[in-house]
Length: 101
Image 1 (cartoon, rainbow, N blue to C red):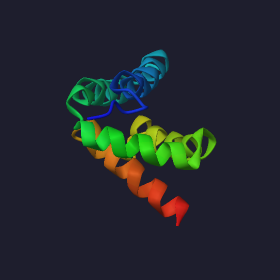
Image 2 (cartoon, helix red, strand yellow):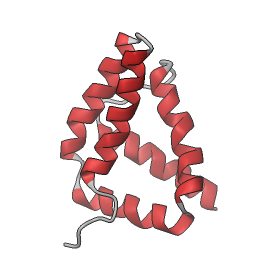
Image 3 (cartoon, rainbow, N blue to C red):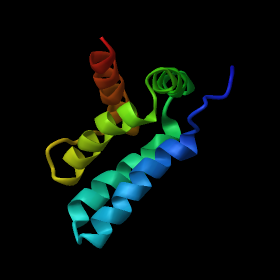
């Protein structure tokens, strides 16, 4: 199986970045949610990461950022909760599909 172009560590970095922001903003609840996603991202299926890599390569980083940022902020402000990092990734993929079509 080919290695995904978006590494698991890079995806985990997303959660670490927002958790650090939540910590800085003294939002312990959001930080805890994001750290849970950070930990669970070790167990994202490789196939899902490969799908994510393919989709993001097609539409480019600016569009991906425009879709990802509001979804990540929903976690920070309590508007969305995910039990596992793969749930968040599935949501991102749905949003990417919607934006492309």
